[in-house]
Amino acid sequence: MQIHKSVGSSHLPAKGRCISRPILKGLFKPRPPPPTPADLVRQLRDLLIYADRNTEPKEAKRREKMCELNKLILEARTALYGNDHSEPVAEICAQLTQEFFRDNMLRLLILCLPKLDSGARQDAARVVKNLHGQRVNSRLVASDYMEENADLVDILVPGYEDSDTALSYGAILRDCIRHQIVARYLLESEHVKKFFDYMQNPNFEIASDAAATFKEVLTRHKSTVADFLLRNYQTFFQEYNSRLLESPNYITRRHAVKLLGEILTDRSNSSVMVHYVSSLDNMRVLMNLLRDSNKTIQLDAFQVFKLFIDNQNKPPEIVSILVQNRSKLLQFFGDFKLGKKDEAFEADKAQVVKDIALL
Image 1: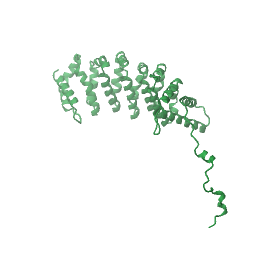
Image 2: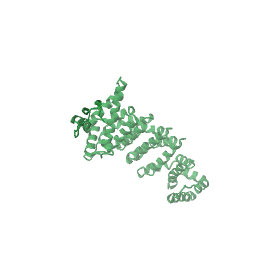
Image 3: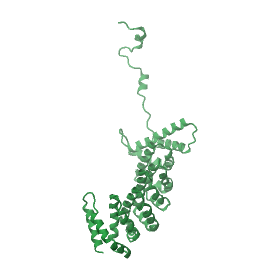
Image 4: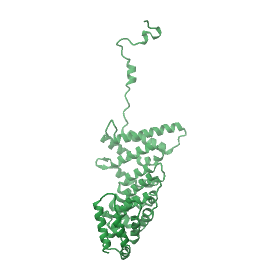
């Protein structure tokens, strides 16, 4: 068989002939080295400033820049957490942390969160979480930064008002609350009252996230919380009872009564607890919660109600109400059972029944 001239030997490699070097060079072109932490932060800063200004008239150009920004945020996350192919390098993490907080990047990132897509917002929140825990020469760099920038709370808290950004802002806010100065700033601001609304958001995820943040600010820093609650006892718990414990929203009541139990049983808040369980109005709220249709709420309400019964210095008006309702209470607790056996619960219930019977 003859080979046609159109596919002649000039088009076929000679036996043993290697592919030319230029072709090899094109096939195995080395990847550019990853940017240094300083370069990465600088590029991020430039693109965040670009996103914040949002003055680009060309839509295609803007999309290209935002795509590049998303990739850089992912690159920062990979540097801090590693991936399937590599582990994070401690030295790079330390350098990235120093550069990030030195350039005030956290504020810029928070301001630009609404302009990122959902995936980039999640990556940004993960980056911030990691950086808050990074130690450089045994020091938390983030702590020093937050000393000067506690006012970031003024941007983060209202973030709950936008359903698209609420969860990202909430995650970053909780990381900032790890620093006592931020928690104090939030408690002393008008922002703390906003959580009475945020926890009643009809969106389950947002309401639950707001409840998690509210819990963080009211339980993490014991001395700060105890001081705040004592100084603001009357106004805070009036709102807490009426807005949260008596809310028509089941999720709100559930989170609120559980958190109340954690607050009152914390030793740091012993003085607050004595005040709370000496109030007849407070006890009425808890007695109503004991009759809630939800078993979980009933159980958490019981954990608080028993504090009223344990109080050795019950005010006369509380004793009077307990005596007037003794038969109803004893009947209620006789029927009050959990779905599964719980020896601690049964022991607590038996003690409450005994104390009420002896009044």
